[in-house]
Every structure is written in C-alpha cells, then in structure tokens.
Image 1: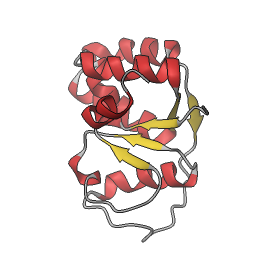
Image 2: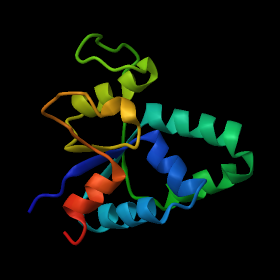
Image 3: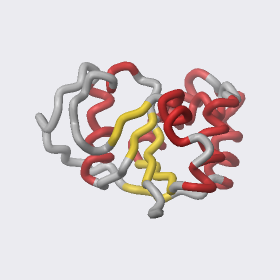
Image 4: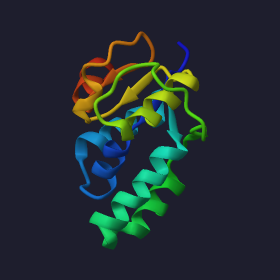
Length: 137
C-alpha cells in the first residue's frame, strides 16, 4: 500500500508542542510509521508566530520537535489563486490552497473553519477522525 501524504495544520502542531497533546503525538507516531508528513512554509511561519506570542517558553521545543520530525517541506506560493474554494477565515486559505496545489492526500486540522469545505482532495479530517479511520493501520 502506498503511503499517504498527510499535511498538518498549525493547530495540530501547537497542540503537540505547547500542550503535549497525547492524541496529536499518537497521530504523529502513526504518520511517522505508516504515512508521509507534509508541512508547508505558511504553517511553519504561523507556528513560529503562535508559539512566540502565546508560549514563548516553548520556542526552543519547536525547533527540537521539527528537527526530530521527518517531513517533506512544501512551499506556499507567494501569489495565491483566489476563489478555488470558500473559507470563513482568510488566514486559512493559504494552507488549504497549498495542500491542493501540492496534491496531499489528507489535511489534519482541528480548525472548524475547514469543516464545511466541500472538495474532493485533500480529505480534511480532525485529529479524532484521523485516529478513528487510520489507527492500527
């Protein structure tokens, strides 16, 4: 079976790094073993901003976490085509746009703004939906 390329949204990474979420760390363990992790430059920039602003004492952990995490880095284009889909929070548009353009299979996000988006690819899953569907391989 071919590995799926799975992109993580900023909130999933913040949950893992700043909050030590066991569920998110479980997802990351599954991804490391069975799938391919994809991170985009927009998410990494956003992650740095959120951690610096809300959890400054965790900033060193971000770099350690990313250093130890095997992932494919994809670039969010500077010029983004508008109107491919509708999303309430315009700050989330570049994340899904990058996932579509990079042809990832799954986007894992806890952000409710992604819940109502009707697209064929990538499959948008919450962390709990991902665990329900893919835990145990």
